[in-house]
Amino acid sequence: MSTLLALESIRFGWKSHTDVLNIPSFSVDTGQHCFIMGPSGSGKSTLLSLIGGVIEPQQGKVVLNGVDLAPLKPAARDKIRADSVGFIFQQFNLVPYLSSYENVLLPCQFSDSRTHNAVEHAGSTKTAAQNLLEGFFTDNHKPDFDQPVAELSVGQQQRVAAARALIGGPALIIADEPTSALDHDNRLRFMSLLLNEADHQGSTVLFVSHDTTLASQFEKNYKLSEINQQVAE
Image (cartoon, rainbow, N blue to C red; front, side, top):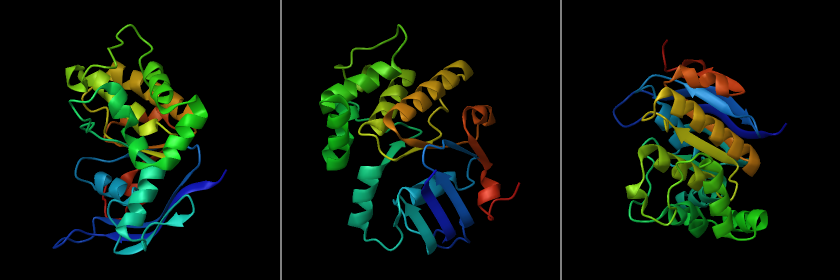
């Protein structure tokens, strides 16, 4: 099994603060879905921004798919993020006036690689989007995928956001507390759909949450305090 993500000797702190992150080493293998548990305010979102190349460390390496993101210029990091990383945010960050189809297809506008993968996988980007949406809406509550996503329920919007992250099979899916608005049964149902679709797309999931009940869904589980020396139990 190859290493998809590796962090080495990472130090990061916001201005006028001590280090938020002090990570000697951390890695995720390709296809090895990983859960990181930590309380609110412990640096989980900062860690994910670092892994996704949104911010850069003051020290150390962030190696994704064999490329060290840290020394790259912002435009180069942006391209790697567009090609290799799908984000599922806590607030979903969907474009409210666009349809489900249009939201799911957005990553293909920024990545030729994901467009190519989607076409190769499904014949067209529209078919790839439809297949993902059909995969996430396997129950009897399937919405009209052409209506604006603002008209969907929270649970439905969450599934659209997950489909958007997965289109084109990015190597890494970063999920930041995306189940916080759901009840227990719907959280578990969503997790099952997400991990199954990630396997189908060939993507690896890195999921962070304060909800320990989700940990059993993953092959690898970590407390943030085991990774980040700045976090106390």
